[in-house]
Image 1: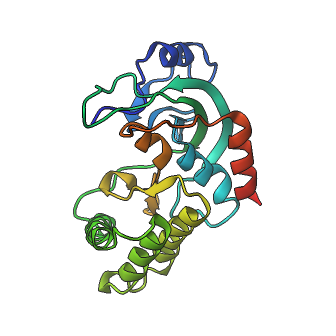
Image 2: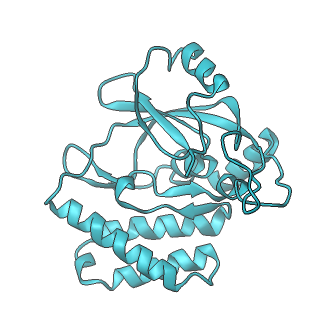
Length: 239
């Protein structure tokens, strides 16, 4: 599938070359919604993203809660630009993507590491990925919140989750977020689970923006998110 956030788009290139925090920073990773750049110091990275749901999850929803199993935010730089989505997606009879004027968010987070093979963390990530996909598929008629909560509950019963109470609490936090923020989906797979240098298991990017994702495959009109709407959503989650 084509990237939803095109980092070589002229507007994004200009932002990368002109923003004082991104200028001369090397790109070290990419995802569907974001790019990851060198941070202000060796143990951090800058995340440039159009994933509103993930941005709110990490900067607002988690607040001061325990982040043992979530990426720690160092500094939130808010909205730094705009991006027209779907320009790189081919229009067909099966897909009719709509362009959105999406905010671009910039925030600095701790630098995480890939999970080494043949380790307990790797085995845990593989088991969670497999079971999440299996149970999620079986619950696909439910709304996303109850579906995620149901999957988390079923994973709780798996033998490998014994003694993993804090990991289970993290999964439940992800599920509860969907209850408060409807335009999100759970994006749990191997690449979105990492670890710290001390071995802490981390769900590095477990949330995706359903609104932007669906805009690429809809025939109906899609409303743009205005700055006022965004601030209202963010404020309601901060409480």
